[in-house]
Amino acid sequence: MLCVTGAETSLEAWNQRVALADERCLAAGLARPLHELRMDTLHAIDDATFDAVRRRRAQTIVCCRPKAQGGHFGGTERERLAILRRAAAAGPAWLDAEADLEGTELAALRSTLSSGTPGTDGKLIVSWHASSVGASDLVARVALMAALGADLLKVAVQVEDAAELGPLLAAFDGVTLPRVVLGMGAAGIVTRSHYRAFGSAFTYVSASDALATAPGQFDLETAIALGLPDSANAPVYGLCGGAQIVASPGLRVFNRYFRSHGLPSSYVPIVTRSLAQTLPVLESLGAVGLSVTMPLKLEALTLSVADELANEVGAVNSLRLRTRWEGTNTDVLGIRGPLSMHGAPLGLERAVILGSGGAARAALRACRDLGYDVHLHARSLDIAQAVAAGAAHVHSWASRGHAVSLGRAVLINATPISGTDNPWPDDQPLDSPLVFDTALGEEPSSLLERAKTSGAVTLGPLAMWFSQAAAQLAWMLDVRVTSEELEGLYP
Image 1 (spheres, one colour):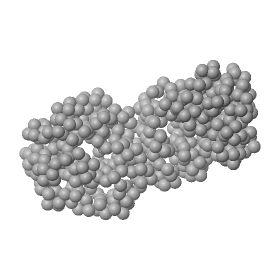
Image 2 (spheres, one colour):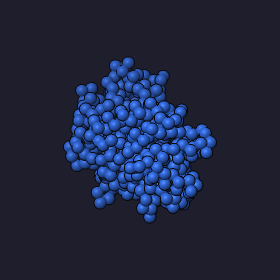
Image 3 (cartoon, one colour):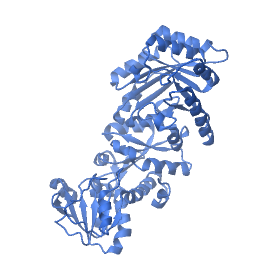
Image 4 (cartoon, rainbow, N blue to C red):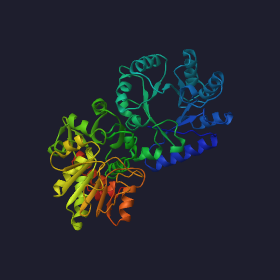
């Protein structure tokens, strides 16, 4: 089940949001969601506020979060408790109260919920919100909460790395009470998208990005795009990497592919610095297919049974779980396909590759397959020579622009340098007939803009992305997927 929330400042805005969210869910073929009323964000609380709770009691969760636990209530604790008591008497479906309230107060709230309004059976949520909690502290906190007489436990903890979700899951071992478990922040998005795998009864989504009440909380439209709530316990597909992955086109395109083909799964960002620590967590959640980006491609190679291509390139960008994690590299095809299509008419003979990471390794293999004489420019000559392995000429980073003529060469940016930052020296001519920028960025590529002014044919990072993504998805799902099909699902 979904619970739509928002930081509305007026009751009128809340009523409008409830009506619009109900309408949107019904249009999408979903049941009416729960609605959280954040009394701590309202500028005024009066009789009309509690009347609204009575009218929508079957769908309403009420809370009044103090600032100490990430809320906005600025009054006294006595005033806040009075609001919670009146809210309980109005008979909402759920009342959310903090775990640091006295046990007698929580018991009184629960009693009021069950008897304050005839014909209602409201339930008590006991919640805890923390900016960070160590594993041992979290276990102790959950144990204490379980003894407070709640109908449901809610724990929301800020996480910086998906590997931290393991302790969050373990904190509920042996706890039989219903729960809602949330990892706040980008690294915790999977706790929202696959909430049932965490044992959660429902998940919170914002009415809109502007009304989000917690970091990492996605909006109702995103929830529908992810196939929620049906996809909440479906096999997990995800993109593993640094914080930059939240801007990947895959998060839109792959989910649209799943929806258009009637598949229940969803594809979500997995922000982590360590695959070794995160993979066991993902396995426990039912992960079966993962995209891998920097800086994890080399680690993915060591953690999987990699195929011949991935071993030759020395990097894995795709994982699928069969009896073990299997690995491959579709970046090679992502570069070779567009190069083959656009480079052949230009009579190219050479390739100048900037970089020595995973993308450079893939570019080197792709260019070799096409018969190009390859020249590699990198900041570390030792790393570049190891990448080249005698199959390419290695040059210093400082020599790019004058060590090799670009006249019959494709220039490939295989570094992370993107947007307004340009990997090509400003004082050197850019006379390549074909320039290929593989670096995904939020800003337009200044390298490609300069290449266009020189009359070059240009290929952007999406050219590579669509080609490699189609091969990746096909490999994960064991079906045929074309880059043209994925292009039709973008943006």
